[in-house]
Figure 1: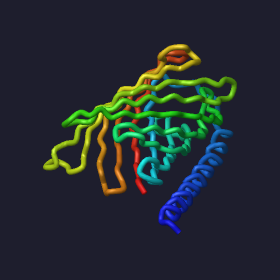
Figure 2 (figure 1 turned 120 degrees about the horizontal axis):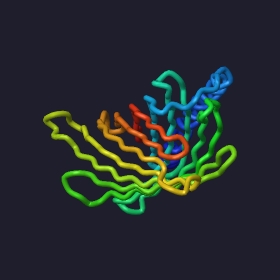
Figure 3 (figure 1 turned 60 degrees about the vertical axis):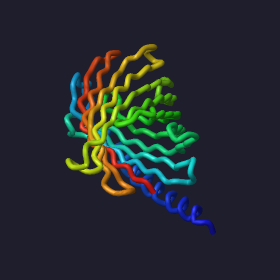
Figure 4 (figure 1 turned 60 degrees about the horizontal axis):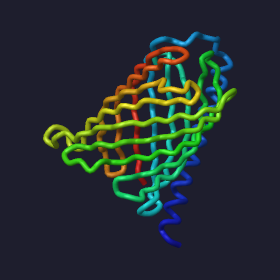
Length: 236
């Protein structure tokens, strides 16, 4: 058989394992939720967001995409939510990628209880042909199936990145991202995220992002969140 078939089969096996680990996390989270007392939301919080992103090349124009996430809140003292996403990344042009994907979330609401949410998302990233540094724009539209109310959001963002001289640390980039949120539930831009971090290429197939993110909400319950995040990116 063609080598591509074995590659896809291998990727599917890995994704199944990730999904099973995520399912175990969800079951544990439900048990934790049942023992939690109702708490009021904080106006400020320190959180940790941790991603593992896996992409597998199907052909020159298409990649298999998946993402597993665990987030901690209450100043890193409890599990906030878990997420698993799967989709395809289409590359019609060298500078343009389009990723439709579906996502399952088990996330806490304002009372501390876990709720299930499904999202259908379409993401497009365009990299501008700029020399000496990287500049990209991402547009993301997501439809959210939520308990009580279905909504959609538009999340545009701009990212600037710059590779540091190799004499300092080879394969190290710094990046800055600005991302506002438009929410159909509030009918306005009600959230903003600003992040700054580094990306380190560890091997040909593996890289790591470490970043600080500030999230500000100005609707319903105004609040600010400070996040220390990691994102492991694996290419097969």
